[in-house]
Length: 82
Image (tube, helix red, strand yellow):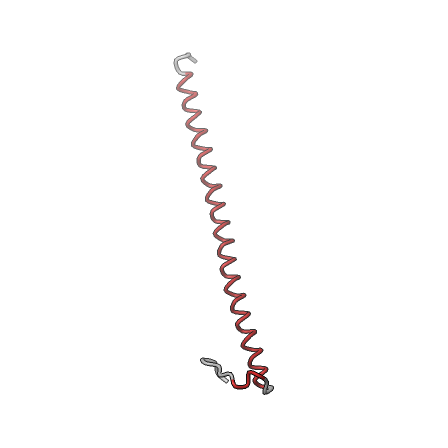
């Protein structure tokens, strides 16, 4: 090989290595973004389910007390079938 091609070969190897490193870094960052998005969605859904669970528990407790003639006997449940 002649010495005239040595810089061109090093330049080509540098471009190929740079492309591989950049592509790998982009794949990793995309994967990391997806993992964070999934965690965020899990937290949002978990919060909604927890809030719904607490709301239902309170309503059931109030209904049970109303059925026993307790303090909440006069509470009217708007939008709920009796």
